[in-house]
Image (cartoon, rainbow, N blue to C red; front, side):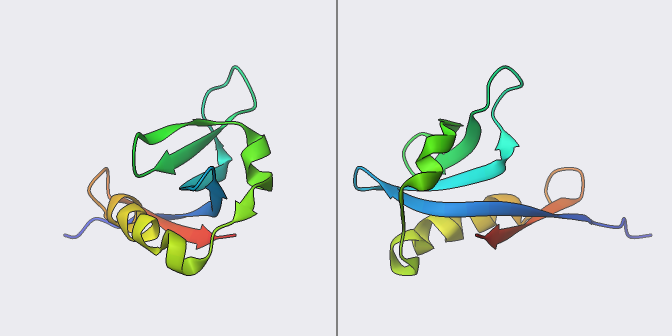
Length: 90
């Protein structure tokens, strides 16, 4: 019998900060001790970011496509506990 996949939406905003493209997850707190959010970058991968970065210039699709492709390989793949996150670009 196949297990049912658990699908959740994960909001992501792609911004350009100091010539680097960042994926910001505004609904995903990094810790419970502050108001910072989770971010993802090609160098360094997952990390903590200030919510102020959400105000940075929005990245163009041609700029963030490689990062989006990388994130889809991580989140839209049911490897962990049959859970899939569908990325929603905001």
